[in-house]
Length: 151
Image 1 (cartoon, rainbow, N blue to C red):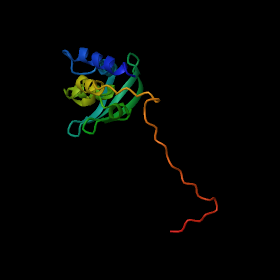
Image 2 (image 1 turned 135 degrees about the vertical axis):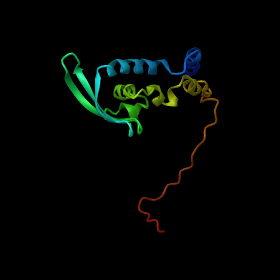
Image 3 (image 1 turned 180 degrees about the vertical axis):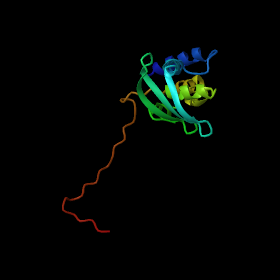
Image 4 (image 1 turned 90 degrees about the vertical axis):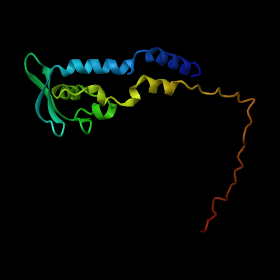
């Protein structure tokens, strides 16, 4: 554990140079963009930013896998990934592309590399050896088992 924190901090310092978002999140978003290309928006309300997105299992055969409701204003989707992971799922990306909205605006601040670095930059203090530390003893009071305590 002692070596983990400096190691992770160095990893994020290297990523900070020229990048804003964590590499793992960018990989997830790239995969979601690829899946979003096979989706079709059935109907939408631009005013409310709510959409019905149809996901195809096999786009070449037009076999639908499911229909998902996406609400960009509330940042929710029926798949559950949008609100749980706090970045755009493939369904939300498909909805954003229809109304020319940047899907990266829905990525939470915690995925910024600077925030990741701030988590890992502090090191834990080493745990002292038990032989050298002071041991605190607790004084226990024993009550008879048949004693009734009145209030």
